Image 1: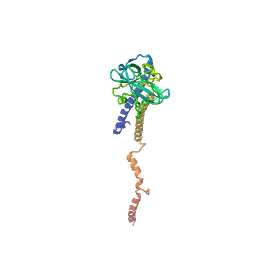
Image 2: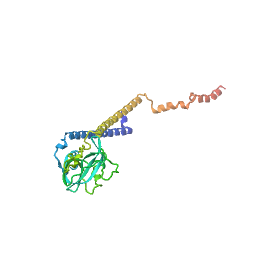
Image 3: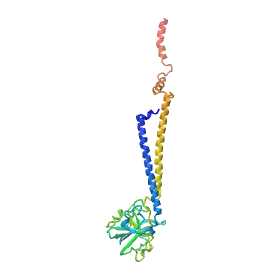
Image 4: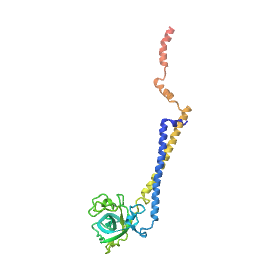
Length: 297
């Protein structure tokens, strides 16, 4: 009954099923692993001590920034140089901007330092001056921003002295020195200012590293997991359904419940050759009439 499974047509169907089901299972397992990784990193982030309770480490010891070092307190020593204002940043549901200064370190590279946040618009709100002389800055380490960062300005057209994205890629075009691929946000905005001019600045809290929270992307991974497993089950269900239908058709044909193709064709074409329903007798009768007549004569 199931010999049809060895026909060329069914060989193609079987090969598709054999390849499709493992592929769906592998993809579903991979998406599930991505979701579990996000859950683990989220749990690890919540279990870490608060940034203010951890000891600060030298900047170079924490680079490059990853999910483990993001948010860790880092220290760097140097002199403040260029200053930029980062517009369109919110804090406590209020619109404002970041005050960012480049810290020229002893290595020659500069570290972007967010000294704090101010409400209002850049250019209209007075900005406290950066401390002069040699300073040691301690701030929470952050990875460079990208186009997907909340508040990032990617359209360009900002006035001179303003910055849309805090990243080495954007700063390298604005300053004549190398820039670290990271930045820090100072939590003690009054420290290191010398004259206390930074007291008006509000500290910018460190953001969680990308891919570590239970955000929309995490639940998208979980949804994709279910979709791939459903696809695998659907492929298997359709294969069984096709096999059952083919087997039932072969059984009905064997029992004579369904006529052979040739018999069905001859039966269907016979009436078409006899429009008046008399079959071949009309011709025979017409051909026999002279013979009967001659015989009678």
